[in-house]
Image (cartoon, rainbow, N blue to C red; front, top):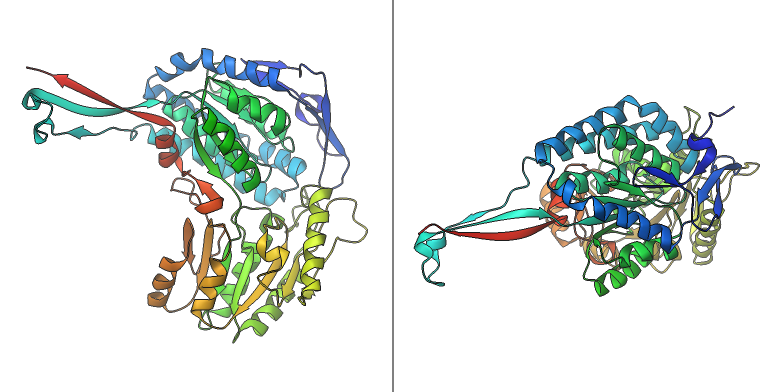
Length: 492
């Protein structure tokens, strides 16, 4: 019998330190992806709830901004410690809410703990610059002036997070905001409200004042729009689909709000004929099937040179068939369910579209027979064309589409042939050639002889074109979340 969810299975807003029922009185049902059984109820918030959350954060704006950086760092280290202490509780909660295998969910909890530690360290490095005033002829009198910049907190930050990393990706928004001196209003995915609320409880218990972090639940159309449009919010940090990100950008622009957008991708995994084949196959399995492919940096298009494509496809299909598919809380599970029934329908549509364009199904290809949950078989498609739906749109599921190329120029054309540009992988033993090709790939990150789904939590991360705007990574995010102020001192 699974352990009970927090709050007796009812997720309410957290505003100014108090749990608040939705003003509409309405709740939506949350289901366990591993069983499709009801799991809990989630508040269906509206604009009034969102405005109350922003108002609560705005009341704490000056107090938190003037809290010394060393004190904010101390609190962040305490948050890190408490997440590590409650690692297993977080992991099991993530597994139940979003179907992530519990072994992977433990790693997510570890990473989130480290994120707050990194943010604490960056409090010491959020610095401005000094300028030699006498290097400028105008205005006159610069010989007796001192010029320098400081970074001020930007103000209330809105953090909108996705389902696939409900703790770590949310922490990548909350930790730098708190470190930079900004209060935060969190709108987590309705698929993982209890993970967000548990994080909020840890943050409160560490000593962060009530109201500095608020959580409001509900649909993006009602809650998200109200958060973006509220006059007190100054920055929106979002991870999710490109379609939603573009809508957020349009709405934020009307209020001159700053943005950090982490959106979709069609990350290419390129294998040249001299690459170590066994290694490339093993890491393609990791890049494609980790967390059922529901990762923004998953390897979504496998571009394989025609000389080795048959051998690569055969070995990848064999590896895919050997993966252990099962419920998220089982320790032996390697591939869990996808998030919901709609995701299953979309994956089925993509496979059928590829089949209709002459692709061959070498492994998987459909829903797991006899399973109550949302399980899709690890699938390998060979002979996929660039026109196929699975090669043009992000599948966000356990599908490995193999596209064959003849030479490097064709590989680069295919890799760059979408509007996206998040990450890319390139496998070859020729590092000179690798560096040359890496410069030609249009992406926010290129990994040579490593899969696409690598991320260093402390380092810059983000995409180009329709994959993103701005950068995460603690230091970069904190710079995005602050305003530069020039101060001049005339000491004459």
